[in-house]
Length: 122
Ligand SMILES: *[C@@H]1O[C@H](CO)[C@@H](O)[C@H](O)[C@H]1NC(C)=O
Ligand SMILES: *[C@@H]1O[C@H](CO)[C@@H](O)[C@H](O)[C@H]1NC(C)=O
Ligand SMILES: *[C@@H]1O[C@H](CO)[C@@H](O)[C@H](O)[C@H]1NC(C)=O
Image (cartoon, rainbow, N blue to C red; front, side):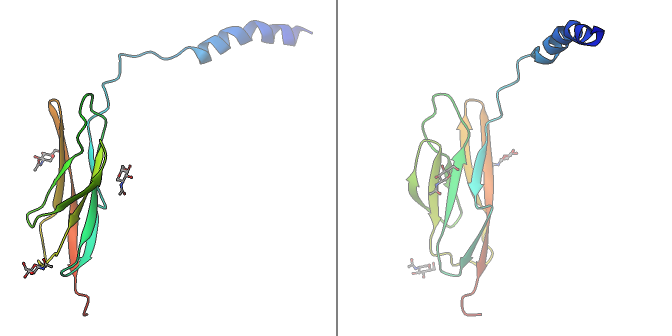
């Protein structure tokens, strides 16, 4: 019965090695982010489309991101970390993308949604 004894002698150091947490320097806090969804909004000419802007955690910050779009948008429902914006009456064929933006301390982040306009009448 030499083998099991050898195994019990080997096992504890092996388990300790496997269980020992690998401690490096503290990880930098995850970068602040903003997300616009969908990334591509498809809307009929003259129609409306909602865009959801959301952001990452930011200590102390209770406001959702803002959306800016050259042709204007209406703010809809939201929470601390997201808000829906509606692009209404889209009457331009190749509009600029809509841009969601938020700031957290020294960091700012943005995310854009491309707007594709099509004709409902073929
Ligand atoms: C917008 O996105 C946030 C984050 O993903 C989500 O919690 C929320 O329910 C979304 N709102 C709508 C109206 O889809
Ligand atoms: C939509 O926009 C067009 C062009 O700006 C304008 O003539 C029209 O009155 C608008 N319609 C609505 C419902 O706002
Ligand atoms: C959007 O964010 C990028 C970095 O991710 C930055 O270079 C750019 O200036 C920002 N654009 C606006 C309009 O804030």
